[in-house]
Each structure stands twice: as structure tokens, then as C-alpha cells.
Amino acid sequence: MMFSTKAEYGVRVMAHLAARDGAKPVALGAIATAEGLPLAYLEHLMARLRRAELVASRRGAHGGYSLARPAEAISMAEVVEALEGDIAPIECISEGADGDLVCARESNGDGTCPTKLLWTRVRGSIVTTLREMTLSDLAQPAPERKKTAA
Image (cartoon, rainbow, N blue to C red; front, side, top):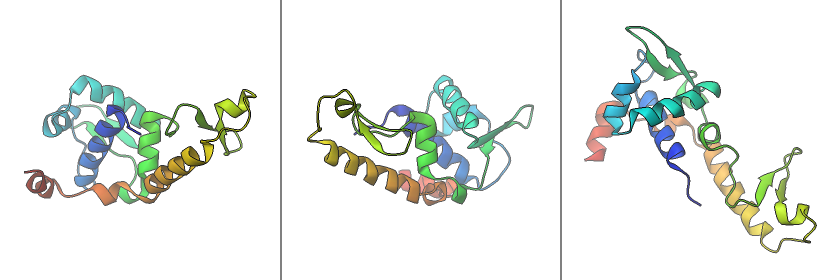
């Protein structure tokens, strides 16, 4: 399974904000420059993260973005789901209203799906990992991040 650039860039932005450890809001342009990401695309991602109440924004001369909650209170599942939507390793597997995983082939009356067990286990492993990991697990103070990137 491959996540899109929405998840990749969004997680990078969130880790960047977490590394600031509650400091004043950061201008999106500064984040784009520091992370080497396109500003216009980040504007789109930040709107999704703001709607999910994961980031807060402030307008004005000292405005910018900050985390809406402490980094240790934000799971990576929340971030990825805010950006990507429902997590599914393949298109035919989705979560039903009752929380059970549903195979589109089975719901169309095509019988039992022989691969449903595999894909539901794959999805379960991914979701478990994302739920157990918090943003604070990824956050390193800004100077440390630059040292490890080199």
C-alpha cells in the first residue's frame, strides 16, 4: 500500500509543528521553505488538518499555524485519516457503519471473497500502528532534525 503525498507532506508538516513544542505559530511559508514543500499544496492540506481540529491558525503579523492539542495527544491515525480519508489497503475493502470491514465483492452478491482475510489483517496492522504512534514519537527539536537529515 502506498499513501499519497497528502499523507507524506501532512505528516512532515505536523512533525515540524510538534518539534516547535508549543512555540508561537509558524507561518506556512516558513514551513514550506524549511521542509522543501510547495506552499499552494500545503494550504490545501492545512485546511483539511484545521477541519479535523488538529491544527489551529491565527491571522495577522504574528499569525501562522500551531498544533491544536499537545503532540502526545494526536495519533498518527488521526492525521492520516484527516488527509487520506478511510484507510484501506485496496479499494474493495471499506469500513461499514457498524465498524466491521466490508468487501465490495461480497456486498455485491458475488459470494465470499477469498482474499478478504489478508486485506483485513493488513489494514488492521496499519491502523494499529497509526493509532499507537503519536505525533510526539516523531517530533525532534528542530536543530536535531537538521543534523539527522544530513
